[in-house]
Length: 259
Image 1 (cartoon, helix red, strand yellow):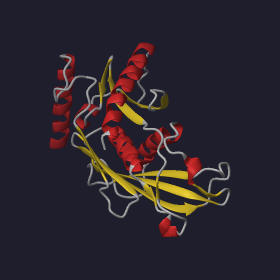
Image 2 (cartoon, rainbow, N blue to C red; image 1 turned 90 degrees about the horizontal axis):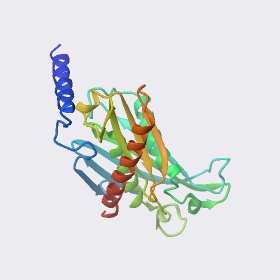
Image 3 (tube, rainbow, N blue to C red; image 1 turned 60 degrees about the vertical axis):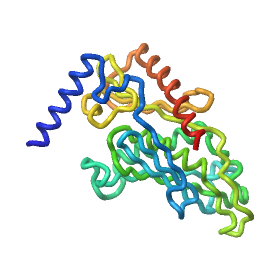
Image 4 (cartoon, rainbow, N blue to C red; image 1 turned 180 degrees about the vertical axis):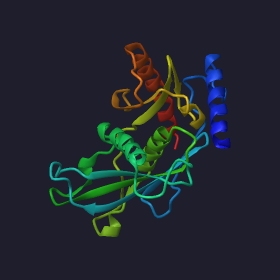
């Protein structure tokens, strides 16, 4: 019962601030929390990154090995994205096999990488139709204080940017950098009535009607969208969300270029 009371108090506080056109942490509605990106944090991985988005923390590790291509893309390598949400990161996460939340998180990140063609998969062919490089992108949520989507997407592309293909280990020539040619960035907004909050914190998520994650490529093209919640977005609000997502993504992309 005390926990329920605390949740209600936080919810009322968030709503009261929104009525005054303010956020509980003082950010503007289109402002991200502080972002830190650190790469090469897992020694045994081919590539890795740790992203701190406010108090949200996500680590991504990349492993690679030769394997068979998909039958419909014999001339391309393979990317597989998985996400793990452990109880250590949030009391709402439960141990066991991947649930719908982890599956959806992996799908959002995967779609952004795939639809932007961030990695040149044609350069990951060892023997066409027989053997290609398989890229495993493993997302680990370490602390969930809201907006795992954007933290995970940033960590994934940052890890891919510093991934080295382990060709020597498999006696397939010299190691080489993974051919990353785009920097897809997602921006998640929480919709509360006729307002939207970019990069919602965990407390803010408790008052939202819906969330919308928009992923753009380096040319500001929208390559993926993911909506959750049943709230219907009108055309004006959707246009505003697309504009703010593009503008925020540009700033996040500059962060990636600094690493």
